[in-house]
Amino acid sequence: MSDASVVVTGLGVTSPNGLGAEEYWAATREGRSGIGRITAFDPSDYPAKLAGQIDGFVAADHLPSRLLPQTDRMTQLALAAADWALSDAGVDPQALPAYDMGVVTASSSGGFEFGQKELQNLWARGSRHVSAYQSFAWFYAVNTGQISIRHGMQGPSGVLVSDQAGGLDAISVARRQIRKGSRLIVTGGVDASICPWGWVAQLASERLSTSEDAERAYLPFDAAAAGHVPGEGGALLVLEAADAARERGAEVYGEIVGYAAAFDPRPGSGREPGLRRAIELALADAEVRSDQIDVVFADAAALPALDRIEAEAITAVFGPHGVPVTAPKTMTGRLYSGAAPLDVACALLALRDGVIPPTTGTSPDSGYRIDLVTGSPREARLRTALVLARGYGGFNSALVVRTAR
Image 1 (cartoon, rainbow, N blue to C red):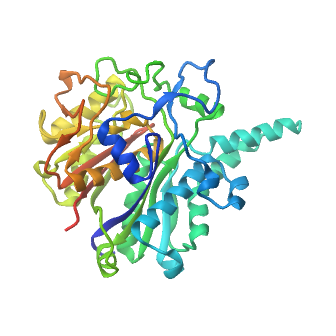
Image 2 (image 1 turned 120 degrees about the horizontal axis):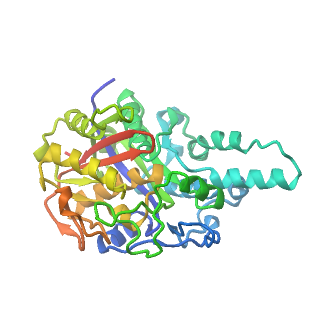
Image 3 (image 1 turned 180 degrees about the vertical axis):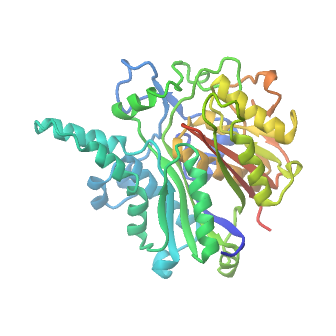
């Protein structure tokens, strides 16, 4: 496997505060939120009633009618994001060898809508044998399969399942496949599970905010933090070898230069959580020092214990108030496997324009000792960014991106 430079040439974004990379970026710079009361179903009887929902997305406007009956909302959003990413990259998949292209995505909470429909159909037929769980497990692979079939991509493909950390894990696998010789990989993640069954499953984690104030419901690093707001959407990216992108004259957003993952130890072991180690290993992989990181995009769990772990990891590596930190997902909600790829897209746009987007709604607790960007965007000279993600159950991932050389 070579150590060739791997670059991002296309972005496809489906976000609660914007469809398409530029619409999302404009809203995020301005601090416009997509969080509100759930409209996909009546949330009155549930303790959590807010979500980041994508308004204005009509699948029939973006996809062939033949695909609509066989796909649910998550897959429809993912197919649209893939189309936009390839178009943004200036790539016509039909003009490339099929086995030179692959799809590597992440999945976490997606598939619940599909599974719920299966359960309803089974119940309507009077069946008591529930096979929807098998359908749900199979559905993890649907996004990757549908994208690869739609665009004739028969190269390396796969699905990563590590909750919110999965999006970064997928990008790292895509990077590895490019270094092994693949020409192009579509990667990232899109999740969507704002339906009654999906909502109950998310509530079971006991990590959801029950506030009904959309502006103050999701407050990472705030003394009033009491859980996150879920959302739907994410981002898909087109990765290519730098040489191949240069040969075809592609515009480049940035380079994937470092990645690492670490797992938390067994609860009660007394050992340090894995996030700090993931950061240090990602910096080592990128061959950059801590003082060369210009901004950190935080995981932002919005639970005091988890926020403290993240803040301590950041300050241990960068020093107290040693690097600007932001969490633009306060405007979208946590999108599970789609959250970290969306942060990567946001980081690349921030590097391009020299602007750190704000963390909205939050009044940071000084005890965390981090330089959290709040209120309004901050202009800065940016070359290198670190994106963090953690998944339920102990997953930790870190990815380093920088402007293309």
